[in-house]
Amino acid sequence: MKKKHLETSKAVLLAVLIFCGLFAVGVLIGWFKSLDDALGILALVFAMATLIVKFYMAKAARENVLKIKRTNKLTDEQISKLLALAETAAGQRTGQNPQG
Image (cartoon, rainbow, N blue to C red; front, side, top):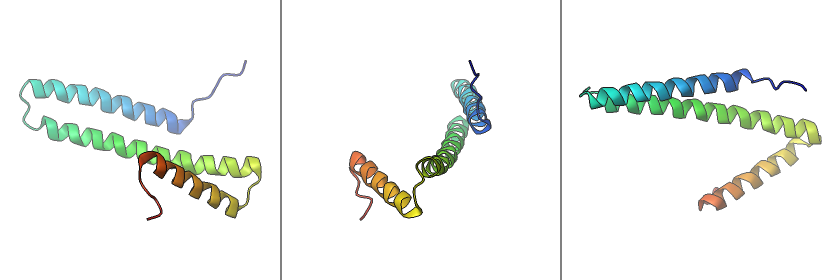
């Protein structure tokens, strides 16, 4: 059986999120011990984690579009239509209208 390889980007994402989690626990402990700037530091940690996840999701989306295009031999126009359909569906799930 072939062993699955953990992609570098996933390993980095996992490592950074574990670091953010441990750092957040440390800051919360400091908050309970009356560290004045604990909430500000905690907000920065969560902002960093959010930014990293956002960049990873954008990278994964680009890779998935390329995989779909390569696997199904779709044209750029067909890919654009699929992406527009996906955005419309996502907007309907969240109650937003992405077209206006």
